[in-house]
Length: 63
Image (tube, rainbow, N blue to C red; front, side, top):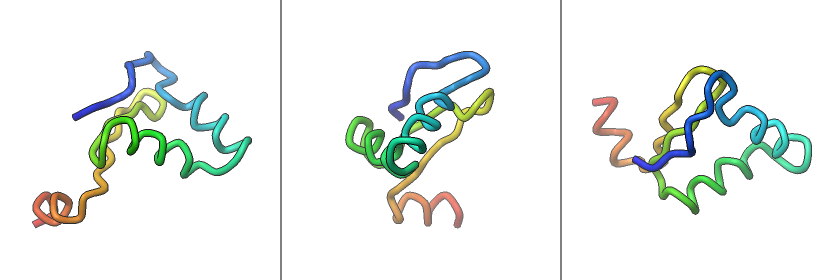
């Protein structure tokens, strides 16, 4: 799974806030999808999140 570099405590929060101020928060996720494909990880503060945009994979995980 592709992901952004780990940043202790902050994660990608500064970048998410920057995208939120300039355009929309979805631009952050669209950039990550283009860079890492439909499954990627990112830091949301001290918590690491896994984003899954493939419906078939998500259905298998939730099943």
